[in-house]
Length: 479
Ligand code: BG6
Image 1 (cartoon, helix red, strand yellow):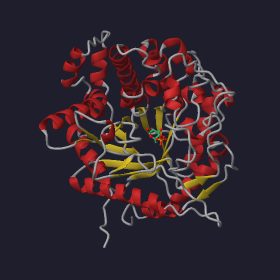
Image 2 (tube, protein in one colour; image 1 turned 45 degrees about the vertical axis):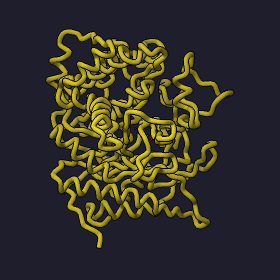
Image 3 (cartoon, protein in one colour; image 1 turned 180 degrees about the vertical axis):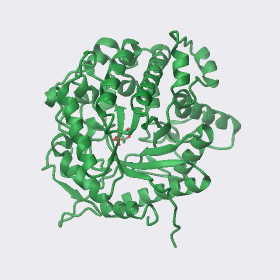
Image 4 (cartoon, helix red, strand yellow; image 1 turned 90 degrees about the horizontal axis):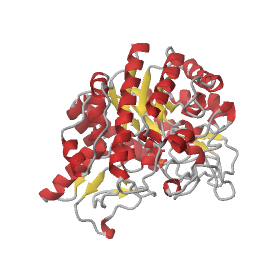
């Protein structure tokens, strides 16, 4: 018989999205251009964005731009929110597109039309008793800040961000109680353009420039936490990290130490600063060995120490296995985090290794280290769905994936972990971040649109829709 799990009362069940992957309406309402708007479709999109000399402009002769229309949430949010409500969502994770509020990022006054759009969305959510969980910055940096300021490598961007944060906190203080600062903040270590707003053109930049930019983001994050606590005392604001436990390939102590170093740098470095309020001890050696000297202004470290986040939000899709010497053959294909193949795990069609027990490990490791509430704000299976003649989608593979991961959370709760909630990624089919595909689907709700942009955009319920509805209805007892 299936084991039954006890999820805490008031557990925040829901789904997660990001503005650029659902909204479309990319130049409606005076919205400015952000990174996602110049991101072409196709598997090589992230590499194209990082090519030297890339202009951050739209070139429709050369590329397609799936994020421009996305799934048209900008016009269809009422229908979509009604479907979330039908599933019983308690929360809906979304992001605010910075460029709807400050089209170029460096204006002094916010754009009223952009502010009004999110008012409409939050009011609609309220109507259905769904609490928004808002990511302030989800791979949506204004192009102007990328082109003319070098993204987060510039200290000035801290001021622009602070202005943006104040504008949205003030405007939505009665409507939003759960906030998050930077989506997958640590992903800048492997893919700086998306989160940090610049590409690495020279090897030396990789270190000095990256970590200086991180310092600016940490200052900005603390300013956001400070403002949130002052303006909305009852709100909670978290950080958001991409978390993938790192396993040593074998018991060779050298591989174990290597895995630990990777784990600390990738999984913990940012969270250590945002949650504990200080740079971790291990980073000093790393800075020294890579000739990194941070420019820290007076008051920065005190600010970081004082204004730490209330909870840790994290995405979990896969684990990673490491050894010091890798051959081409060892490499885990498709795994954006690199690492080597784990012989105990199967991978998704996109090569992401499926590891539900890894989520239990992640939850335990994070809770052991930080002792703050945790929130799984992204998890799910990107898969190809087949629409049957009668219009149904029988996505048993997705149900199995989600079942196993939710059960792993149930185990972690029994282990003593304080878990606030779970928002399944891409609760409605959306544009994939890494490939721009529609065919890499995560949703409970099917959206009729293909990789070429054809389709009616009609929404329909997959089998997993009814399954997740029952999960929420029974507070995780029936999986
Ligand atoms: C996370 C991002 O990295 O993973 C999301 O926060 C993204 O924006 C998700 O969509 C899944 O990745 P992908 O490439 O399958 O869309």
